[in-house]
Image 1 (cartoon, rainbow, N blue to C red):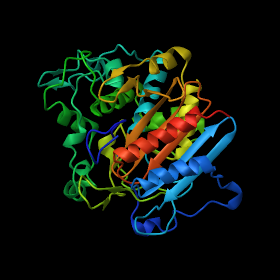
Image 2: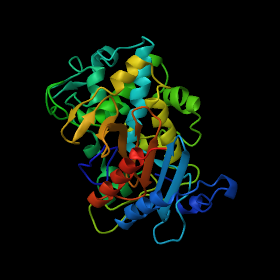
Image 3: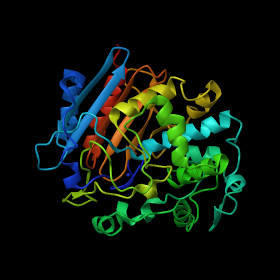
Image 4: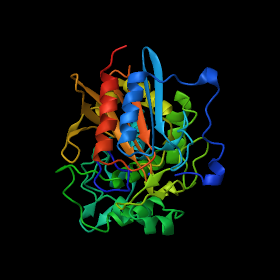
Length: 382
């Protein structure tokens, strides 16, 4: 469920099917529909694999079409290649989906970014110095609420033993909030910046109150179906990844990786539970930045950033603004949820997008190689 540079191994930002169910999930598509790897992209993907990632896949889309490249394997110790259109848990890239839904509701006049949490969720954020009467929706989406992150309280995300014991545990959103507000806030609302998945659990709960329908329903109705993201889903508490996918692996800070493909993602409600593909993520970020999902006023709110010292970038509403080596910036989000890590984003006009993911932990060298790939591809013209 974590965003951008990671603060703790094994989290964030959130898989899968058992090995027996995966057997037929990683085959190549028909030759006529295979993406065509481009050599420069392939070299970058190979470089990411060389840092220790089990498997890597990247796709880049722009005015000249799309290119895809892969390296490594879908199952550790096997020769099974990464599936071309493999599905994976996108972790904190989910936050951009949630923020887009909230901003659509704002544009429809059904809620305001200045509404308090208490207005929509009376009494939910109270105790130990936490007070929903002082926190606005905007502060939730921007991570300036001061609320504590719930992820460290989720055993399955923090150790191999915790994963084995609780990988099938289902959390309710209310339970997640209670875990987070059991400690005092980091700072008064609006007086600092700190990344907390709790913010997006609450934002998704507010979506449900404002619409009378589930957060998952709103994501499907407002984003997935209109954009034709046919390989994207909101799994609820389903611990499996349906369709072609690679296994996910996490080391939890040790020398031995654990297959963590199977996981109930309910702890990532609103903040990291979406399953997608590199192709669908490219389409989503291109459409979002290109103005197909939000009116101009709401798109301006989305991309209005503040300094996020923990990340070293600007952060808007569920999206980061990241400098490009060629000048200018792009908008996107890092995603991680136990065994899968992704970087995805698009240029400010949405004309060019890039997404890359790995099916294992990403150390510092891996993260640098992933961000370098996105930077190079978004700096490329044509």
